[in-house]
Length: 344
Picture (cartoon, rainbow, N blue to C red):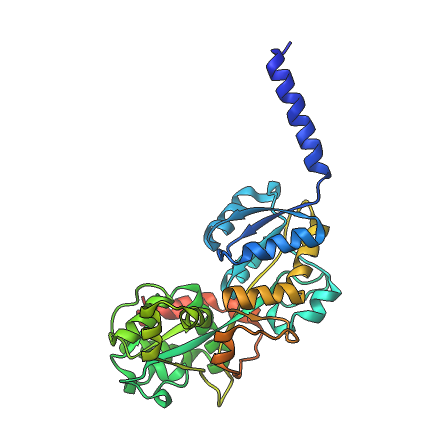
């Protein structure tokens, strides 16, 4: 016989397990690390009664964990940042197809994986643009008003970026591959290497600060980093943004590159119905506003308008219209180009 304390412990564990089994729940594996998402998740639980068990990590860690867990993974929903990472998860077979009339109607077709006969693997729920920032004192905006201009000899010694192989840049260059073709894209990347003011280092905020300090004349940044600094009341941030100008690239051609944060239902989700319900919630007006107000992203749902003061101040812009899945699929070709041109 078991000792009495072990028997009681086993009984309590069985009761807890039984209660948990009856509870509506989803297991969320999320690479989104924004504090403002807490309110988003709390609202979902309040609205639906479905509890969220979260596993947080960076994109690479989330993907590695899912692959190691295999068919025994408890994950129901996977949220990732950037089309390159979503495509990687898709190519690793980590999603299962979803059929949802609501999602198909509310999420634009170019912001989700190409739909198959069994459904769609992942959807974009918020968007961010890759903008060009420049030093107002040393650079004319008309000299840096396209991504292609960043590789032009007239900008030699002025360019700063984060690592060329970072997913944000890989996706941008994957979009250029769609717009400009392979030969021209590789030529642009070669020119960008020649124009670097220093070796790639740091994140997008570091690039903006380097432009403000005059270390660089021009840099690339995701729009929400710019908006975050614009909304800051810290004196140093206010002073920085007085020195930095913002360009919406390629407004006379295909438009600014737009990327996504998105997600889908995990391949072996034990709570698929609840997982789909969560994805549909992310496409609701209230959730879309959380993305915009909380993390300075644009809603993916076109009918939802943001009152975020920084996004409003940045103004309307022409965005590219290409399938974001194709951009993600270009990443291997882009990485090979980066190696050939020596873009670190």
